[in-house]
Length: 220
Image (cartoon, rainbow, N blue to C red; front, side):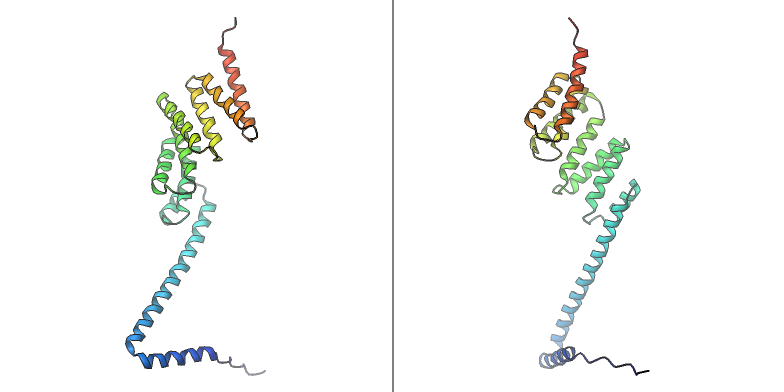
């Protein structure tokens, strides 16, 4: 068996060391202290960056696999300052809404809007908040929700969520017994959005509402 070869010396590394020794001899110990301080800071920054990257991977992994309210709450507790925190808050709000915990969902949406007012999914939280108000079902809540839906649609006409706001306003008016006004909203949407994929749904809702109007109209 051949003897293991020794690795070739790193000439560049040795040259760098010799140059550093020469520089130290010329500039003295104070300069050495300054260099070490800079190296320590750079090493610390690299370590922090590496740990942050690992945390980001872990945060995204947990968000992708989260299913329960406790899963999302744990993410918010462990990664409160990460980029996944607002998404976890939104997911928690939606989960509570789907489970009919409307007041809890409303609180979650409002916390999101207060903590991340400039987040890219702000409109989702704004609309989710209005859905929670509508879910209360009382007259005052339905009036508030109808106005909020209308305001959202007016402020975000090109947003992908705008049709849901329009339909939400009509739905609230329908629950308030204002059937003619609700039908007019659907009709306006169909007229002004002929190419929208939501138009078919608007026509279906308008037809169902028209049947209600027909039943409510006394026959002569």
